[in-house]
Image (cartoon, rainbow, N blue to C red):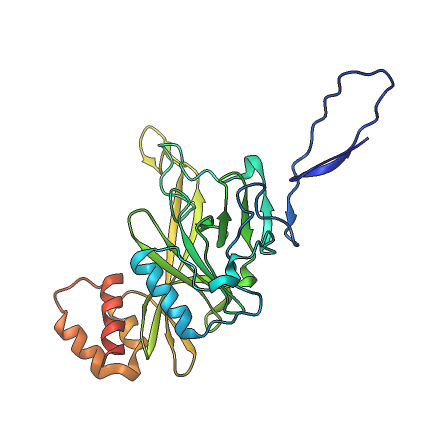
Length: 294
């Protein structure tokens, strides 16, 4: 007898004549989505744009602005988006106990995830189609650099990076983030957009690693931490829009000045006007905004 169930590998059971009770254990299956329903019950109506819908940069910009400012989940594709679409060939589908746990034990500091829960989001794929649906909730894995999607809190999709151009996420605290693929820097990473304008875009790459407790007490000296920790490491980049070139820099006065040699007069004025401020991420965001506006 063959037994099949959504989310589990097909199983063949040999039935013995006159056997009344049969206990069968099904093995969860993780597979690449190819025309497979996103979730079993709650995702029969998925508001995706028509396959041939191509959004221009202005449409994408307006959608992002609306999402970042208001977080509204609304359909901008008219009647075509009301079609019943049950398939999203996006990436690896994960089931059951594989659903991420965002809350950690108290003795663990930090997190591998951007948010402590699933949050609303907006995705623009490589065809410039905008994908946005009130059933879709997201989170971002900072260790693997993967976008995660769920529609029922029971299973989730690890979205294929190659299918994403950019995505925006918004937490319960109202903080919003836009992550983009930036070929001028690297093609296989997502970079957080910190500031943008007509001349330059400022990006941050976050790499997170897990560090286990390493506390040692010799009786004379002690070192290390007595807790596990997720540690974030940041790298910053300027991208020149005109030349489509990127420059990595450190958040230090000398490194910033060397990165903006072509904008020396504006940089000098900004440093002079903000000489009493700490040179940190906010300082650099202000500098890029100033240069873009002058």
